[in-house]
Amino acid sequence: GMASVGKHFPGHGYVEADSHHALPVDERRLRDIERDDLLPYRRLIPLGLDAVMPAHVVYSRIDSQAAGFSRLWLKRELRRKLRFEGVIFSDDLSMAGAHSAGTVVQRAQLALAAGCDLALFCPGDLAANEAVLEACPVLNGAGTARIRHARAVARARRIVLDVGALAAERDRI
Image 1 (cartoon, helix red, strand yellow):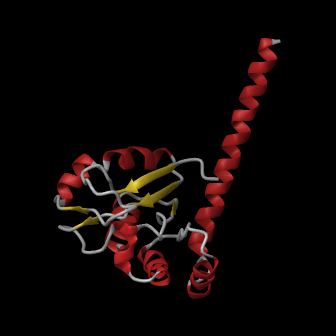
Image 2 (cartoon, rainbow, N blue to C red):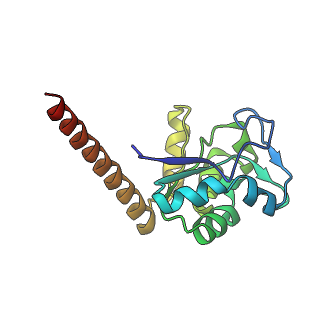
């Protein structure tokens, strides 16, 4: 698994609607979102944040698409401005907050085109999962490299933790 995931980018705290059941709309300006929501990302990305999950929230003054389907949010704000180099994976595309982007296949295609490396579809609907797999491209080289790097970091962190536990046990005896 991933060692650390920042979610729900760029922030989910200023909307009342639950994106599991509706599409929340945040009407704040970009400068307010930068001030109120992006601070954790600004601080954690340089420390090695491994992955980010964007929100199924529309930030209407910035883009008409929910963040997880928005090139502006994923490529401009997250990749370029915040210099995030880790894995981006969508929130569950079966959630009501994602339905405005079309069919599940269209949602997956939009999420990937916007900058997600992985598209999550979690309800266990085998036919829908197969349709998504057939319609979506295999990971590109950059996405594959980001996922491999995140997995290697996660493994290395587990090894470091295990060595620390062994040393503590040794000192206890």
